[in-house]
Length: 230
Ligand code: DC
Image (cartoon, rainbow, N blue to C red; front, side, top):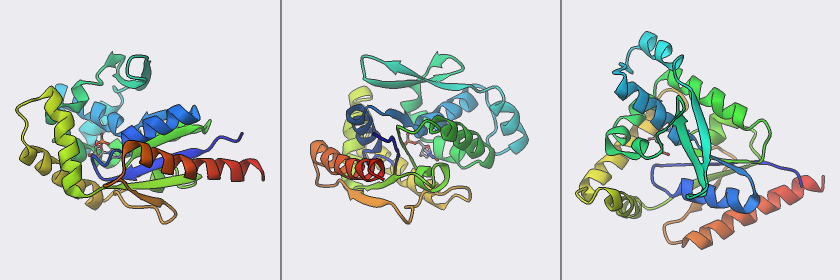
């Protein structure tokens, strides 16, 4: 069977990573969470007090950053390593979520992220989720999915997830963070979030995880079969 590249883009907290992870498992593909890469860069900038508005400082700092993924048998997906250190939990903290979209809007941060993501796709057999994967990173991907969900449903889902680790967090805080990130991600100058013209839309507002997985897998299998018989 031919292997393909599958991209999943969409707004924050639409369930892209969950779906991408499940698809990769069934297809025996590699799952890459591109957002984790921007979050790890943001963590590095916070820890080293890097001014992300200063391009010279940003370019110098990026030279000291090495990112890798390490398979975690307990969660069944890969944890991100920042200079060899597992930062999978830290990058999900609100202090990083509040800053990551600003950092990810920097031109040099984007070039750094995109170049590494493109290398990861050379062998195909990959499911990558993010904001610009179907438009900038893999414009020739065989299957592009644009995931959407009703904003109120996204807030409720994200709140539930974050409240498990941080019981004090309010729905208002989560709503403000999602709204801010959506705005920055879709209006930035370099590779803004937008649906690729050839992407299929998956609105999962009223779908169970199983239903959305089945829909996406059907699209993937149709594509893989059509390429394999050519
Ligand atoms: O998917 P996520 O919420 O973990 O992503 C964190 C941030 O990283 C998101 O607010 C925007 C940025 N991002 C990006 O600019 N491009 C990507 N391909 C993935 C994420």
